[in-house]
Amino acid sequence: MDQEIYLDRKTFFHKLDPRTKIVILLAAFVLILYFENPLWVLPLTLIILLHGYFSESLANLKRIRFIMIILTISSMILWSFFANGETPFVWVVELEAFQFAMARTMVMLSLITEGMIFLSTTRTEEFVLGMIRFGLPYRVGFAISTAFRMVPTIVSNVFIIAQAQRSLGA
Image (cartoon, rainbow, N blue to C red):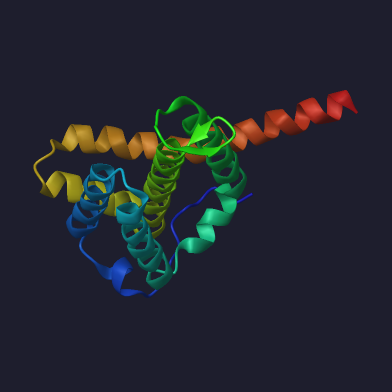
């Protein structure tokens, strides 16, 4: 399995300054977290999906599709049962609770998608350079860069250990 998330494409979003990409990421996070109504969250989710489509980075979502499916199912079930509402909808679920569950699930998936788009269009070096240009001390940027570089090593070690345990079980 390839641990590299960055996709080398020749799109407009790949060519943007890293500071612009960081601002887009933060703006998307702040805007989408502001709303609780699914009718307001849906257009923002569609904008994020268009961002992913035009940056040609939605292919990376295939890597985490099972996690996203599990998060969607569990989030819809839990929020539907534990959020409060007044209008009966289905069984013991109220309409307001179901709408809240839809909105929170869309928000969660949109945040994950926007984060994956950012990682797919921005190299680690660009991200650290952008943070330094924003005024972050060089040492902190170096620590962030080192941490990002360790992730593929840790992930590959996890896969090696999992394969070794499977072979011992067989």
